[in-house]
Length: 217
Length: 315
Image 1 (cartoon, chains in turn orange, brown):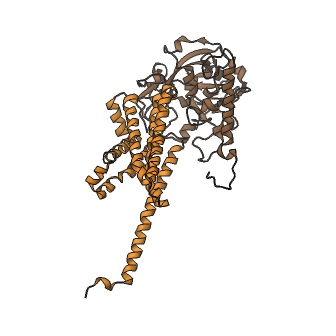
Image 2 (tube, helix red, strand yellow):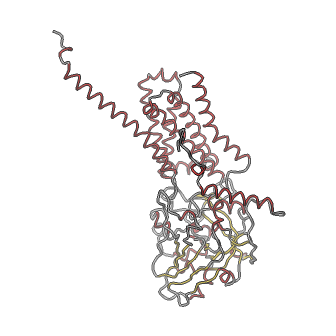
Image 3 (cartoon, chains in turn purple, blue):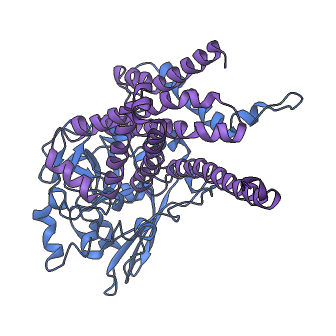
């Protein structure tokens, strides 16, 4: 892919991912954060964490379905933005929502399933962010790195559970997010299944067609 | 929708009709606010003034929540699930003419016109705190009179043990009552209920106004009930029927999620909602959370109603 196109794509991702934060800062500056600003900010940051995380998880399926390579170049950037938003989300929860009331926060983490899921999602994103550099890929080896980064699926599932379990009856967007995640995971499962079937068929055919070539006289 | 060359689409395909109509209403409203000289800078139009005498004994000594917050941050599912939906959409509700049917197990059933209801007893202003089950609270200067004044007029029979409240069912006035794609969570009409002794308790207020004016639509116009020691959803809005009954009413939230919302739903920091703690709350306008009080601070007056009851079981 042309370097210029890649730069344009990445710039677009930067813009799209920073826009919600800029809007939030603007609304804060103009006193437009609703009557319950802390709740609004927490929810907005959480929404965007999950959306961007799902976007990062969509890159590989896009490549699989459309056979194009460019989405992969955006995957890391999107993943890091998801991590950035989850850090803000978590910080707001600690500082603004609970104001460092550690015992109460800890009680919530262990007692409230939706908070437990959110916490686990956050924890599973930490090693991914920490090993996101090319140097870490080299150090870990591509195989280990790829395995480790399957945690991103876990983060997606945990993030969706977090949303499903906190959303009150009558809201709908939690279902949309879960549906998107299911589709994205479905594409991968489908892809793995198709590949496995092909492999089995071709190896079966291989045995039938030329069994003697491998045996030396 | 994807546009391809050769395919035509109209602006209707882009903007849903109801969306742009709403937008127009909003613009007309905004223009009116700008054009009316002498209007305050508040973004919410002021309603008709309502005279009432402050009941100091039944009023909190706290500064009320800002009027703007109280009228833009609402749970009123008939308009939508988001907090800003009621303020945005409540223009469709027509609080006049309005009648409230008061019947069931009573000796003198009667359908009251709203203006007759307003004159039934002296209007009092009472500053109550309202604790939402979601963990936030407000301090609100309501205007009304004890529900008991109305109930005594219709004379509940000896068989009456509960009182059922029914909110208006009219999808033309309540947009969220229209059927939608995902079905929906609550069954309409919204039904709430109290035990008869709770309904007769002097704190239970039949409410027709707040902040010195008639109830804004998004706060449950033209008449609602306010039960300050219970979570906010128990205080049903826009009532069309008050009925004395023998059996515990099937209330809207209890039907939707029985494990989360019990019939009693007294404010109780010791009983968590299954998904979140009720130990603290954020008073709207304050930064730090504050501890939630049993019965929302009204324990002295209402705890005797529940003597001998296991409130962890009857949540």
